[in-house]
Amino acid sequence: GENVEQHPSTLSVQEGDSAVIKCTYSDSASNYFPWYKQELGKRPQLIIDIRSNVGEKKDQRIAVTLNKTAKHFSLHITETQPEDSAVYFCGTSGYSTLTFGKGTMLLVSP
Amino acid sequence: DGGITQSPKYLFRKEGQNVTLSCEQNLNHDAMYWYRQDPGQGLRLIYYSQIVNDFQKGDIAEGYSVSREKKESFPLTVTSAQKNPTAFYLCASSFTHRGTDTQYFGPGTRLTVL
Picture 1: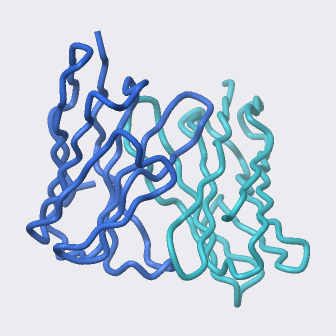
Picture 2: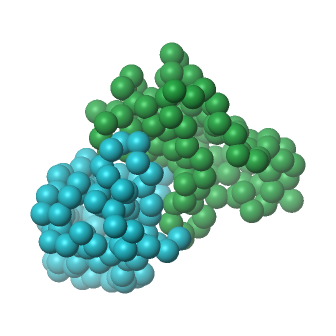
């Protein structure tokens, strides 16, 4: 089955800095790559997603880049704020179920 | 956030007891999913259902059972055969089971075995 590796497991930044989280996957058939944000004790919520026919997608301070040749995709958060502190999960899917990375805990210090 | 509900929010169970977690959605979604979340383990798929009266095992189905008698409901039973059931359980749904359909999550149920 699909294998998704997510790095780093924890990331600490100062408010205003940028944060980058990277995921690598194994299944070349994967064509959908969502990112979810989960605050402590809450449900995961989709923040951005990208499909394989697109190399980059941006939504305000959040962007995702995809390199299908190298089988990796990354989440970029610019001008981080304390409310960005949460666990972030990447996911991949092809024709079937989503496989998730193990998550990155992002801590933004004021 | 609305559209998918899970109950109860917290659940305590004695060893050897079966317990059923509720998941309901009013989004008219065909597909529903159950995930288990443990610290540092991400989200692992237990069972999923593409349509009413149909369901398939996910990666960690042992010790769990499900039913899908109604489109809106996908209850999960944690049986006494599940060796380590203490975890946070998340239900999700999507419009279809196509891998590119966005999954929306419920608020979760935290199960503790005493």
